[in-house]
Image 1 (cartoon, helix red, strand yellow):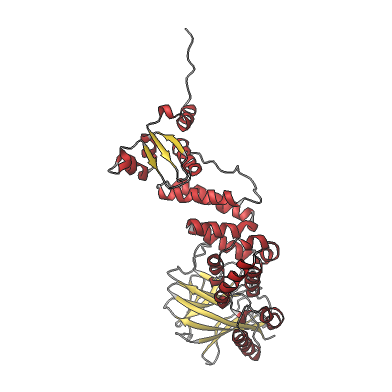
Image 2 (image 1 turned 180 degrees about the horizontal axis):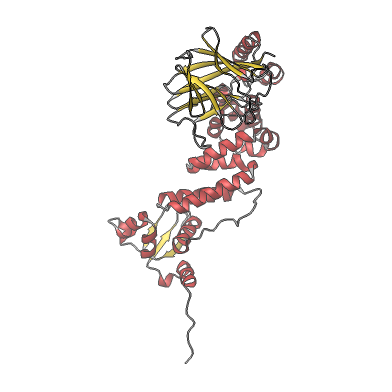
Length: 424
């Protein structure tokens, strides 16, 4: 008597995906696509499906259960429940990811979240982020699709990627900019943490207005632009660009350009350099931990500029709101902090003695870093026009050859970086 070949576990699970004869429930997607399912196995993997298939819902006795996701998404969910595998791109570099795939990927993450499949959601979002980093040119599409699906993690990653690659995207991605909704563009323009130059945000808005192919959409974009343009911080755009490009565009109000000229004139009068990005202007902190270096946190924000290695430099900071654990100073090469506040000096985590230095809400703090003297570098501070006080001296060493203005904010607070100048 011949032996019937034994079906492997993998083969049996694959059979469950397609053979309706051995299924005890049928799942129907939002597009009407149906697929067979094993009630017990699905319930064992997903707490939501367990409540649906074995709880007090009507689905617990129905042979057909409707779930509000497309059939292709349900197939991937069911395959994951049976095999712990996800049907995604193979590992490796992927270029020019199609919009439909991005939508499918983020919809799968949303379905996993809805069904309580945390590992499926985590792996899917990790894949989306990896593909986004490999192909920054697709970041506008990721932003739009993440907004539609409601996937905040990928949306924030797309915003960061766009900000990082804005110059290239504005130059090369006119077609992708066309895909943006006014709501997604608003997310970009409202970000106070943007590190790209403000002129690039204006160029993005200008391209978005002009990109639609039909007149009806151009008119609609122009109407939306009246509100969107109010989020462009014109005083961060050099006066020559304001005069040559921004004002003639007709996208911003004349009064806004005039106010920008006024702010820039004040900086020029103080011999202060123009800061051209928002992240260089304002530092904020909320419930962060001092001296923690976590790229995902908001513990310390640094001025986005060339590090200071020689000469004498002065910068002005306005304290917008203050907390008891807010420190101002500089950061060295090895994340070595030189800061002070409320009569105390700190270098990294070490107490360095007392000083008179203290400030409060609306204080104007002037800091001077002198790397030109024979004393090895000093940091001086003045508050609201008071006589300068030396916070640190002998700062230059083998480990610290360059510095950058910095703020540590442990509790909610905000400081505004007014400007920086080189004295000699």
